[in-house]
Length: 234
Image 1: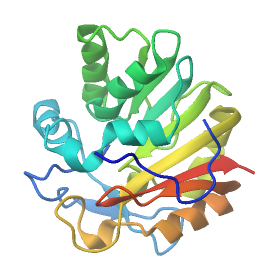
Image 2: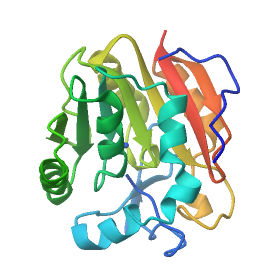
Image 3: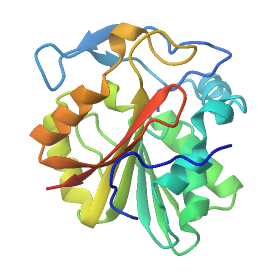
Image 4: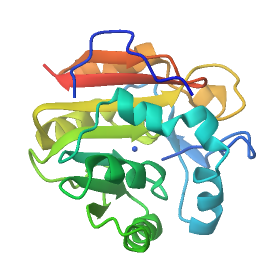
């Protein structure tokens, strides 16, 4: 497994995924308006824990998600505070918890109460007390102000409404030198991910973050189906 490489200078230092077995993320029941009037924000429920555990935590996902490579690319360090925004069943939350170690903290953030409870139970079962399960609101991550070094938003950004407004709330929770990393699906037909019409091209994400007061700090195209964009407040 090759290490994810940086394709632009990076500052050193959330869950809607389909497994290869299911091929694609389910078509949402409705789409709402997001950061722009031409947005295609995707909405659907992720409250069936048993179903989504089979999808999100499918071992086959590791081959293309490359979670350990991604965590190394993001330079997650022991003692840091990291938020997994759109944590789902905790696929990245538990891995991030091991990366920050017992002196760090990982906020597993989701808007589905059943998933948040699942993360809480999973943390106890896997003996990861550094995990804090957070029930967020659709328009508020419910994170401590100036309390986070890194926010990972994996396969979740296209589910958020009014994204440029939401970015203001993310900026307030970041510590000095903090970053936001967006991992989402590339445009076009692929074996995994949502239908093409629900995907956000990376250029669009960069534009939204720039409008929200962030600058692009790093990026990678090493994942087979997803882009990785790292942002920092300007």
